Length: 280
Length: 314
Image (cartoon, one colour):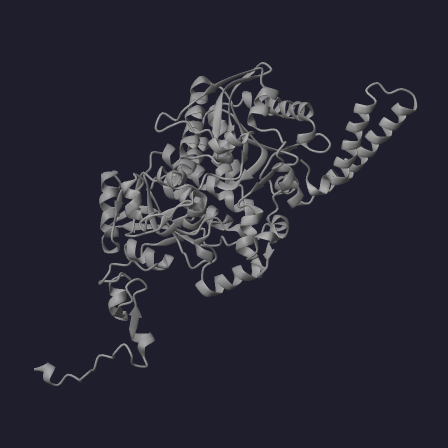
């Protein structure tokens, strides 16, 4: 009877000194959740179903068959075409800090892999990298991942998470909007599917480019999806907006998102769509 | 209406106007005096306009007397047949378009409408187009493709309209859809930024084979005021933001974002409509001609390469 001899353990309380290591607090409902449980639940609160943001790597691990991810365009990094500097100092310094903090060279990880055996091109944005902002390196990586899909006749999946275009690269950031859309036009010409997954937040120049031209639009629950910021809109129309304005659910009602998929069901849902699209 | 940095010139222009009123048919020394005043005006204008700061350029681009889309259409085209509606929702006054003839060349012309009178401005949201505006533009571009007509887009907008209804009707989707369809359009597209190239609102009709700018126009990912309030935490630092963003035609040409700059007459387009139209027409016809023999497949692949190269450094 092994359990008589089991070592007695006491569950640490939320107020114990090791709180940060063992417990996570849901950013939405503030419930304290055991860290292991939080991670097992893919960073989704099992009390209120809040979906915490994932890093690009975590998302790739979630969506692709283990060990199948092969990175593309890995050498592409941020650029400083304007030699930009603002009140806080040079963009180059800020970018270098972000790289050190995240281990990434730009706001998107791109590559290809398999979803239950089906080969896909996959680009995943990371909000930690300067708010997932769209800049020259981001656009070039997404273009390369998309053209890879065209060349190898694969479907394309892009996971968005962005505050919009990165001001520090100016007009060059803006041009990543038509650049990525032009690549997706080539994908369409090749008759290949494109699934756009919108995660929190999907806004500005990203929502107004590649995120909104998918064959299928999938969003995670309560994702913020919009073009202009809430405050700007309220100041423009001089009215308060409803609480659910610009949520994924709101966008489903207004005709721009096909489905809301909770995180645990995402991989299986993608597989089903790929099968409907005739992908192997 | 004068800009603060034009004050000296405007003073001379006022004196010239007064002089002409007092002396409708000058002779002898009066003619000499008038010539002297005109010369002084030209010298001062040249000095100011040769060296505009980016923020000053923004102000010229936004000048209330600057030509607007209907001025360009009447100045360039011998005929304009306006078309209305997006066939889905409505007719956006913030974006207009239709068939037009420039000398012997038939085109489809499209562009944002800022409006001249206050009533017009309100109706058109000051040139901030709604989704139905971008969708009308798309309908007209597909029509041009079907009829084998080149597309001319004239851009002048502070940005796409940030309203609740615009958001609910898919402002983001409309802009995105336009860029994808323009990238694939099998007819030549020549784009001219005539005033303000306001971010996503501009690029939503800006995916051209050739992209031109009038010499006092500006093109930016965000307005200098917007950038200043975010990155300088001070909306009044627009001057610094305008410098940092590199939004003038010269910078954009260097960055290979635009293909050519169309010189405005001395003192800006607002001082000389006929001169502006002449220069713009010449440039348009030249570039339309350069594209007319290109087959549709080559057109699309060249357009793809053009935008693919933007921001490619590694």
